Amino acid sequence: MNKEQKQIKKVIDKAYSQLHVLSNITWTPYRDEIFDMNKKDEKRHRYNRPSSDFEASINDCAKMFTVKNIAESLLNVEKWKVKDLINIRKSCLYSQSVVENYKDKILDAWKDQDLKYLADLDYIALIDWKYHTEILERRSA
Image 1 (cartoon, helix red, strand yellow):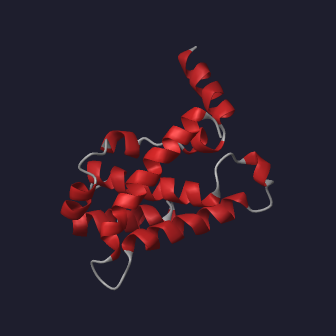
Image 2: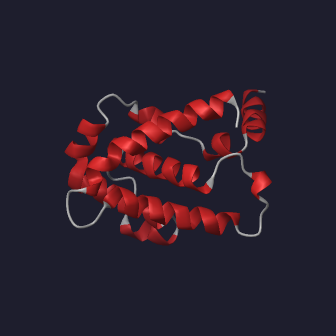
């Protein structure tokens, strides 16, 4: 993991940690529920692929998607509809529901976070920096 990826991971870890407020609202620890969904999806995605293909751990990627999904929902609370459930990861719709129910608690916890940055987190940048930079170079050419 290079310096840029470590910085991204640091932002993700801080934002994820701040979501602990979602763990003590009801009997359901919402942050952990979303993380578990994303971890399951990431394990399925990596099945039969060598771990050397990924510069970030499964847990790091699950945290990233947890943070990203919640930030996206904060910026666009109507991004997903029930009909989208068959085309997206379940965690996206679940995150949107958590945001609709606990938006104020999340915004208070993330008062020092850049929501746009969190919503725009790039999976490829986290798992393969070289490929990420190649994509950016092709886009700018």
